[in-house]
Length: 445
Image 1 (cartoon, rainbow, N blue to C red):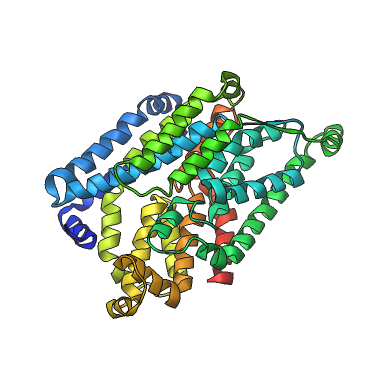
Image 2 (cartoon, helix red, strand yellow):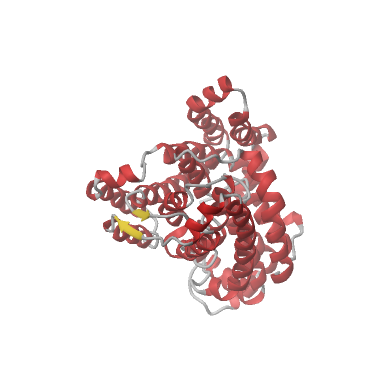
């Protein structure tokens, strides 16, 4: 078998630079087409899936026909895509059978508490599960004054930053767990950065929401301030199925057993969930369809970019935690954060861990596990930087993390205005989120 690093080097040597264009084109189309005049926007809405699959075929076909071991690399990328979409899809379907009935209108303080609970829940059922379960109640709670910033801050907190404490919280952290990072190591080392970052985001949200609340007529403010919310959970059977999906994450890979269990839980959910619950949730397959087609293009067309990073990353000269934090984060915002995390973890191993150090360890397991053990013991802040960069910066764009785009799609299906690709970045990510993430790096890295 050809070593992964050698595969990447061969791929970079044989793949022409022009093959980076499909990935850039896909991102550009996703960002620009929704902002174009009605006719072209309508064309994009009806043909984006053909464009995404077509670009994936161009890149995948080149790897298959022209690159030695390209079929292996393509198969690995497609396997990751299947695992990704099985998890995302299963959580979407099962969570769509859970209806949290909410009465009343939330105050700014109640909204902050709700987001904090969502952040904690993200570490138990993942950012995807928490996002799908809570986004519809979140919209209903704020139905009188729901605005774009409500959706954006939900993505910041529940779909990304909240899930930084456990390997279940976000896919890159789970890959770190499989490669030897102990399950509770993250909580011990990142809880301070998580708490400060989350607290600052919630504080900014509270200021936004308080301003929104103050614009409501005085009688309505008084009524909302004195109401008593009642919460009623329907579709409780699906909670057990969510637990099955989370447990399936820990099944050994191979033969798609993990994915089949997840999809089996989704199929059972569709069977046991009463139709009225799906109707109350306005459940349909449009959001997961968009995610599935967009990310088949992303997973395939980003292969040349990831190969270049793996082959030439050591020449970047990264030695400080902040360099890993911003580099991992910057790429996680536009590439899938799971392979980005793995590549920078591997880069850290090759930079800081000598082969003799690995041989001297008494630990068991694969070479990668032993190398990670040495890295954790000698350079823990590097691993913290890679982990936080992958999770936190996934919130910078709609495609930084799978749940982001799904939340946007669900919100739009519910009639909520959401900012476009550039609006999200220019109005919220750069002026609000990025300074908070920079402050977190300054304090903890």
